[in-house]
Amino acid sequence: MSISKRDFLISAAATGGALMLGRAATFAQASARVIDAHSHWYPQEFVDLIRREGEAAGARLGTNERGSVTFNASGIGAVFGPQYIDLESRIKSMQETGIRTQVLSLMAPMVHWAPPAFGLKLSQAYNDAASAAHLKYPDRFVALAMVPMQAPDLAVQELERASKLPGLRGVMMPTGILGKNLDEKSFFPVYAKCEELGWPIFTHPVAPFGRERLDKYYLINLLGNPVEIGLAAYSLILGGVMDAFPKLEVFLPRAGGNAPWGIMRLDRTVERMPHLAQAKRPATVYLKRFYYDCIIESPEVVLSLIKLVGADRVMFGTDYPSPMRDLVRPTDFIQNLDLPQADRDAILGGNAARAFRL
Image (cartoon, rainbow, N blue to C red):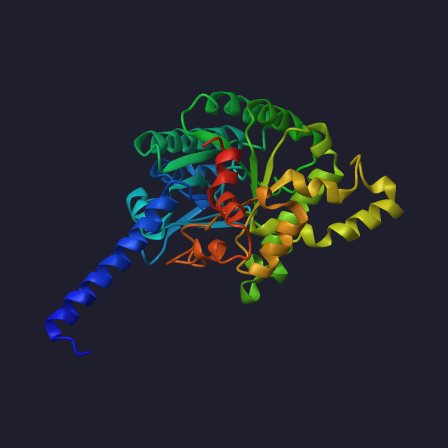
């Protein structure tokens, strides 16, 4: 059977249009449920405040060849590039990749490097700007509050204030604060307030310890950050934090770092040396108390994590705008997992909607 050039072109156009409509329909359907639980943002107000007052607080500031502000203090480095600041380009990327909502959070340097009063001022600048972003784009953005953990009394004070701001749904926290692990009793009032508010804590690496051995080969990110996440998780377990605050939710990035994969050895160690732990139950029990994201680039690892903790504890994240993320179809990683569709839907959005009350 022959076909004319005209008929062929009409058919091709129709087929292409159908494919485009199908993709748009898929994204439209996904946009109602896909939530990126792990994305980072620097408000311009936060950057401007550091530019104005950061050096007086002990930071070293500069400008790189692209015109972005560079930061270094207490071994914490950061570059405030435009891709981390601009919301309009972020929304465009979300539309292109089928992501409906992002949970915004501050990344390095956060605020704990600063003197307490300036740490509070930085936290307030971030929280106010994050709430404003939500009010401008209520369907697109919610955010995790920043608080000055170097001064727990001020942190509780800012939690009280931030809890009244529209769009804030949890707390961003470094995996360690000025050389202290997260089980320090001085931090307990902050955890108590988070539990009272029903706010999850997202604990994220800022400056991994032992960095003098991690500078080569990008090991500071490849190995240092996963160890930091595990250190935070094990401190919360062994230090009795998860028992003291039974309703506290904690979110661990990168599939929990190294925390899930050494948990049986941790159980055996505590069994042989019970004096090491204040936890009331085996460590494996606490794994299901954490939320995890899927930023690990391995379907096998994510499926193993789901076997350990359940699909209801895993959330979709991109680490936007990190250049390491999938730039084109980030949700395909989850859609291609050998799981029931209900589990994939939960990971793509349902679990984050529950955790962050979306």
